[in-house]
Image (cartoon, rainbow, N blue to C red; front, side, top):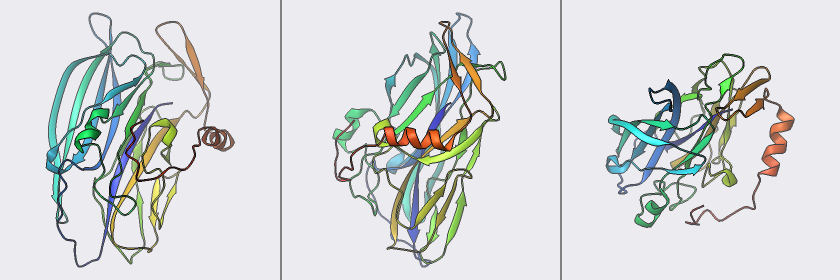
Length: 281
């Protein structure tokens, strides 16, 4: 159906505390969601995208249109919704962007803009997995008219603090707050490199992810420090439906099938790559 990429950083520290660090422009986490807003007086389709990003120095990166017609910018608003904690200087901004589209056909947005890598603005804050890992965040926007509701398809919604402080020797379970306004089934999975969904693309040591409940579980292991999580939130209809588009085309969407999803993951698999790469897809 539709998906959003939710990137998280969990801070693993001893109970006694953590030393302050600073990395100009470094990325701490973010997410993107979308909401259809009907049609404007000129007949164009309107969609609202909310992009949350946490960076050092309150930086906010832009995006590139990865596929389809991403329309034109009509209005944008921004504000700071969180900042500084646990001795780390960070700032989370939310940008609400309204775009006008010539059709309701699917399109994809990718964050950040590729040339940001040349200025060091497209990298995760140094973490246990990699001290110089690029970050990627992609959202698939599908505004097709649903046969079950008669309304445009909407994005699943997920929220999470950009920072979580976890005592190193204490098991913890964190259930992501996920919701789908269409009543679809929501699942969480780790990102796929071939789909521009991640850069590190592996769950950190000591953690497991339950895709059905979107629960992260930590079992004490390894050293203290930062871990980055690149999680994709997806929605699936509870019965077969069709999505129809303004050009007369349509597509069929089916409920989640474990076997089908495994086949998709295998077909999208890629050769293991070095986590030290800075190559931009």
